[in-house]
Image (cartoon, rainbow, N blue to C red):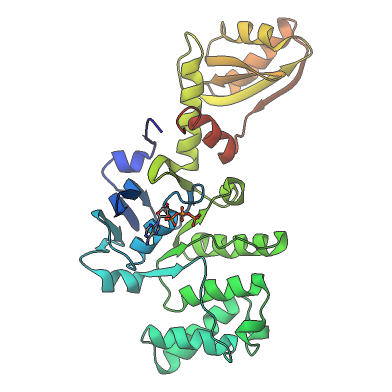
Length: 343
Ligand SMILES: Nc1ncnc2c1ncn2[C@@H]1O[C@H](COP(=O)(O)OP(=O)(O)OP(=O)(O)O)[C@@H](O)[C@H]1O
């Protein structure tokens, strides 16, 4: 690993988004275990309504970071803030604002789903009607109502994960920390979990930090990502910022190319190299390069100028079969951005 890339404009711009502070801020966090730096100067931010993927291979430092956020461990250096409260100096306030779903959690035998949730509601100090309402709200949200009286030890993996998520929601926290919640789920349960997480962020404005070592698992639900390897953040920011950083990097690779503009791709019946040569002469085209059988380019212009570019291309004799804005997956962007960075 030779460099760190943080592409979040929010971190650079004074930690405000639309005038609001971040709901989660990890600031130069380091955790040593003897000689091992499990977490090494990790920083990233997340905002209300955002699902942020915490992505990295096994042993990268995700769980250690999450445990510190959940006040279950303390950092060697640095600090983290949940709704502005320090995990070191104000751990009680953090616990009230945060729900943590660990990657494995105990299920007590002889306890039904409703009793399990009620147990956690008591642990959070809820009493009387407030406790009953909280448990009911969670049963409805997680769709566990119909199996409320089933024993927790008889649940399927998918239902067990719903219960684990429900457990973190009883005190209605603003920030949710979910450690590998999709691990071991079948495709249907995974989609259902994804829908619940989207609801929590989009409808209830919660911040969700969700870890995985599988990038594709998170690509579809995350608005932002922090990618970690060997304790260090390789890249962090919104998915759009990560894609933009990738485009800038791609454009910088093209000789004479100036970065900026929307990513586009064009396919013709001829050689892509010919299209690339022609594109590089056109106004608004800031970079172009061959991309398999297509020519990829970045274009800085409005719809009318884009239409003119296509018209000119046809007039110039190119047999265009496809001409489209490129939507790059988070995975593609990550692979390109971290190319040559990881060992
Ligand atoms: N209590 C501990 N004592 C010593 N080493 C630890 C301890 N906890 C974690 N580690 C080490 O710190 C490193 C980071 O571990 P961590 O569990 O945070 O990684 P992770 O990204 O969550 O990985 P996984 O996906 O496998 O859970 C690993 O090398 C791990 O062995």
